[in-house]
Image (cartoon, rainbow, N blue to C red):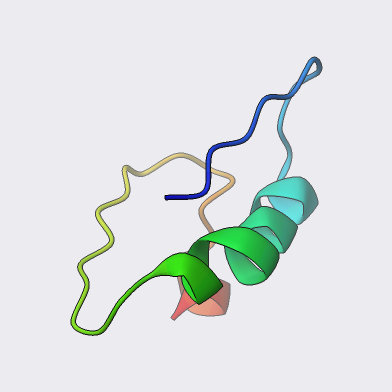
Length: 47
């Protein structure tokens, strides 16, 4: 797991950096990532 604490609003850039630098490397194969439809979750970039 890759928890994060932030003191300001999370934006798309910050989310994608955290996803790439911390969360994805910590996942084991196979894994499932379940996300909501928040605007910071750009589906075309995350795929």
